[in-house]
Image (cartoon, rainbow, N blue to C red):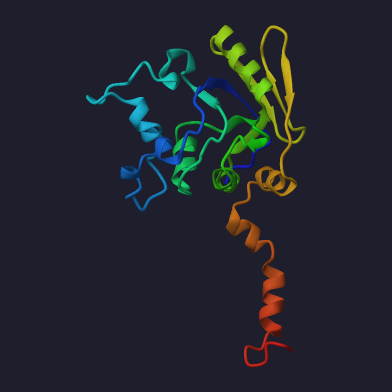
Length: 213
């Protein structure tokens, strides 16, 4: 897995809340036993017309977002089923970062991302950033005002800088374990191998006939 330190790319906006994993990668594409080839089918039902052409009314099909690699969307992104394919599809479609806001409604906090989706991003080297709703609104406004707007995401220093005429900086929080996993480019197998000596020591000492020893 490629380590994540900093990334600079074009910012694209998807003005939809509660985007579930079936919208990100519909169920008919889950039949493959491979982990490749999902990118062109990301957001399939919104992205394409019945004749297979691009639906230019879909936010992410706008020419101004060509070559984008940072996705900014609304709250509760990646809800629904736990399919890891959703992250594979986004990554293979060119995204390295997804940004979404948390918001509070009637005293209840609505997260930027569904928990399982967020965990899957970390396992696949993609950075999921949660900002406030006001900060995400500001990003939407700046992207609308500046075509081809780019941003730099700095994971070590935990901030996002939008390259507007007067650059805007947004600070984000991230779980320490997830941060180290992304910085090191470590998937779950890599993390397990890191405990190989401990595992070997346990196996050498463990007696299955006397597990209390």
